[in-house]
Length: 269
Image (tube, rainbow, N blue to C red; front, top):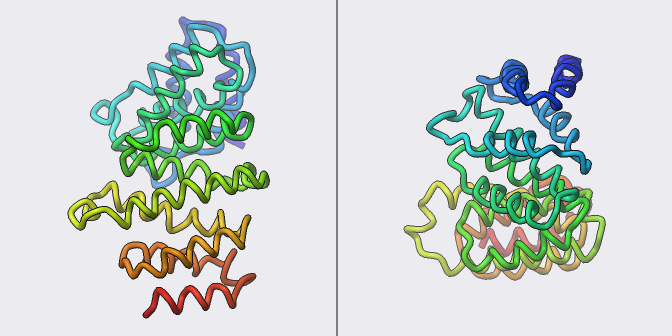
């Protein structure tokens, strides 16, 4: 209820540039930060206000200014970090309604947010990209393919997190694309060196894969289990861990017990 009350206070301020500071104050006040859980309900209610073509230049610039808040200016769990989160998420919400030049700018901001030091900002990037994917998956596919070859671990994790979004996976072509990107990532891990795997960014990527592969496999069991089996057979300890965690997810373990057992036996050898 508090989130709904807050958004009712915020929205009337959109049309008054000299009151934008009040928007920032209200968002920070209702952010729930510092705490383990920021106010996601309010963030999404706020972002949803931009799913239309009525964005003013001043309001767009306000959102951009929030995405430019650095980790030094607003570290993790500091209330102004919430502004960065809301800015990134809201740009994703607006993307579909923007002109081509603005769409390109938005993608630049989202790409930068993928590698932010703050985990919440990285989550905002994935969530913003999910909002785009729900309306225009072709754009997501094109950008991911364009960015992939030069992507770092955190960007790869953002690709995977974006795609592990059940509403978009109901489309078979989307689910197949998600598995193709997953295979690229797994292949890159297999060919990576030990030093690279010790990085914090690699850990973040690994944790993302430990969840996402089961989501993709649940949508396309034949193709998904074939992918898991292929990489289970490579006897790579980091890949084995990723695969084991996915096999333990109830979405696979309960419905596909025999297939899960077969692959688990491979990675446990």
